[in-house]
Length: 131
Image (cartoon, rainbow, N blue to C red):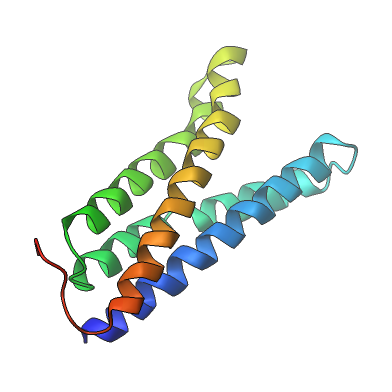
């Protein structure tokens, strides 16, 4: 069970990281003249929106240690907030501009969480100290 949770933790965090790169690509396509990519960016973004919650659950069940689920929780919080910024801005450009900044922060957190997931997976079925 622990090994499966660690594998899920790793696969979900890696898939989320790849999804974040795809999101940046889609945003670039939209911003540089391909307006049809805006809706695809939005749909994919809302689909990715909840993946960090699954990562958090997998990190918890992986029994890899407290820092794993705490970083996954930070990723989930950031990822749940930053996509809502453009809709909540009320036309305020500064608040809307925080959306790509949030994506940048989420990408950094996602990379860190994916590295943690890789380390947890390498530990095998033994739980880390501090569980």
